[in-house]
Image 1 (cartoon, rainbow, N blue to C red):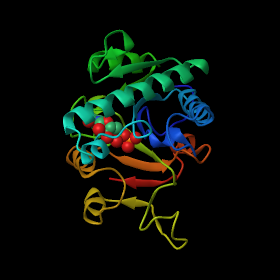
Image 2: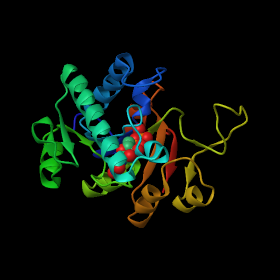
Image 3: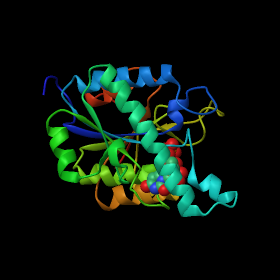
Length: 238
Ligand code: UDP
């Protein structure tokens, strides 16, 4: 480790929507560059970094199923969308001289390695950032649940959920100026109050296995790095 940090190994959940920036669809390359600069600054501390990336900027299975598509088919399409984002992120990280590899929960032949826990751990121990694509590899799940699952599998110290705002609020801070931010919450409070942190399956998996969640902003420059260095950033769910 090259720096004083609060964590040794972290898992970051980045939503697909975050990659859109202000665009209506797809990957905004300025946003991607900004994120990779943030991730590089974290990686430079010596922290081992795994990332689960969503696909909502390209395709969301539930939305298409609502329009009549077979749900598992729509979900497989959603998972493939996350693989596209994972490839874009890995490429952008490599352009910043950061070692990164994509592991897919669905076999995608020459496109990316298939998820293998032992190989993922070896990469992390060697300082390579591992980007998990295709979520859990199963329909009816989300990439939030994949973040909890992979975080537990790789024995991460914490799962960071990157959002547009710096933590969890009692109401939407974009719409209400008096919205109050929570410093800490219990898993059950999140579930009972139906707070928009992660879906219930993802929260329950963390609760049942004592995985600490930390919700912070990916848009606020340096927020992730400050949290990694032990700063009082965002909301902790434990
Ligand atoms: N998905 C899935 N199983 C998983 C993870 C994702 O079927 O384990 C599909 C699902 O259709 C979802 C889409 O992939 O709508 C994109 O993932 P998600 O909505 O979680 O992305 P995000 O909201 O983080 O951008």
